[in-house]
Length: 318
Image (cartoon, rainbow, N blue to C red):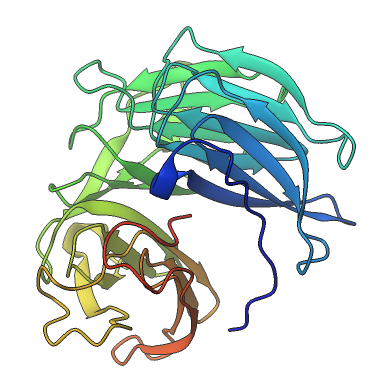
């Protein structure tokens, strides 16, 4: 994997934690990186990867370490762990303008993450013990100003991150493992009133578990990331949600630590499955791509170490 280009603004606050989330958007002609910093959401054109250009930045209002951004049609949606609620951006004016079309902060103000699938925005990481472990907005009719579909408590409690595919949700529940939920009667209720998600299964016993942080699933295969030094990525057979089984586990260990699955080992953050490749933001090991074509013998296919001189939570997080 080769370095192509970089955009950086050293005037932004935050020091070593200046930036947080990263997502991509294409209008069919130009490509953009949507990136969060402590004060802004940045819209950076990367059509020419060797010369990224910031086209717009819009402030969220508060200084925060955590933001998360996703897209639907020509809109971007962002949450943060400050007091901003759900921010909605119209991207149709790029590369010239980006417009904030809504700031929805009545249902919630703080959240850690969101995922968009099938015209719904699924928001998790809102304050604990509020009955809002999962907050859903309907984007389909008015994506510029979405409507609150419902808020629900989850059987496994607070969720840090969520991946949704159709009517199935995979929620990362910190030290309580990962739960799979049926959303069929939540997003397509027979009686017209959305019902709470139903837990189909849970995996909380696997090699060296830590802080269950995020996941991605394709077919009968799911990858989980535990955000703890030495906790690896896990490949899980999800053909039966009631008996989910870890197939294998793996970690990059670019530093060559003698015991990579110890407290001296590297940290994983977000995995993404594309075909037989698993792309991982691997903190101080940078971006790492694993070949999972043989799930029992996973190998590194490519990597780029974005910040080689650290062994902590700095580096590639998006």
